Image (tube, rainbow, N blue to C red):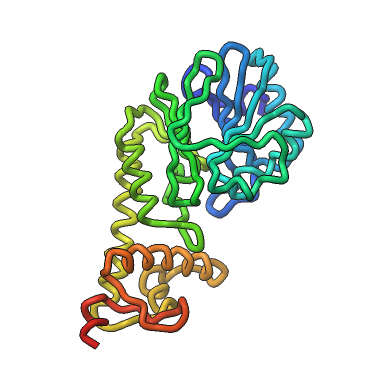
Amino acid sequence: MSEESKLETLAPGVHRLERPSHTLPPFQTTNSFLIENGGVAVLVDAGFYEKESLNTLQTALERLHVSFFKAILLTHTHNDHCEGLGLLQEAFPDLSIYVHGNEYSRVETHHNLKVLEDKRSLMVGDKVIQAIHTPGHSPGHLSFYLPDDAVVLAGDLVAGKGSTWIGKPEGNISDYLESIEKLRQLKLKQLAPGHGEVIKEPYNKLNEMRSHRLSRLEQITTALQEKPLSLSQLRQAIYPDVPVAMAKMADSSLLALIEKLMSDFKVMHLGSNEDGPYALHSKAEAN
C-alpha cells in the first residue's frame, strides 16, 4: 500500500489516517484525522504506537506541503487515542497538545499541554474547528466540528460499526445521551468515528446510538419485573453470550446503565456492594 493510499480525504483539507493501535475488539486500529489549510496542520488523536505510523504521517505532511504542524487535538485520553504523543513530541518538539480540562491530569507528563474547553474555536489556516464537550464515554471527551465542511470528528462517541463502550467508573449514560443530542442539532454531512469507516448518514447513526442505549435501559427494567437480580444475574439476562474474558467489561457497562436508572428513580440498589441485588423502584418501596 502506498503512503498516499493510507490517507482518506473526507473534505478539502480533512484526511483520515487509520493506524494500528492497542484498542478493544472488534477494532484493531484507531483513526487520526489530519486537518490542513494554508500550510498549517493539526492532528486529531494519536493512538498509534509504531514508528511506521509516524513515518506515514510525516510523509503525508510533506505531500500536503505542510510547513507548520502545530498541534494535537485529543478527543479524549484513553490509551488507544493518545499513545503516540511521545513519538510525536520527540519528532516535533514544539508541538502543542490540546485536551479538555477534565482529563488534563492524565497527560500532564507531556509538555506544551493546553486546556481546550467547550465551544472554543481554533483556526487552521482559514479553516475553523469548533470543540464541543461531549462526555459520556469519558468525562473530558471532545468532538471537533468543522462547520464549513459539515463534518464532526466524534472520537468514541460513535463507532464505525456497532456501538461504542460506556462503562463505569467514568462512563455516564445521561451525559452520553445529552452529547448525542448536541451533535443531532448540528448541520452534518459526515460523522467520523474514532474507529472504523466514516459514516455518510450521520443522523441515522446518531439516532441508532440513542435508541440502542434506551433499549438497553428498557431491557434492564424488563428483566427486573419479576424479582430483584444481582449484577451477575443481570449480565446473564442482558448479555447472555458474553465471553468470560469480557464479563468484567459487561458488568462495567451494566453499572453505567443502572446508575442512569437509579438517577431516574426507576431502579433501587438493595445490596451492600455493586453486585446488588437491584430491584424496580416501586417493588423496592413495597418491601
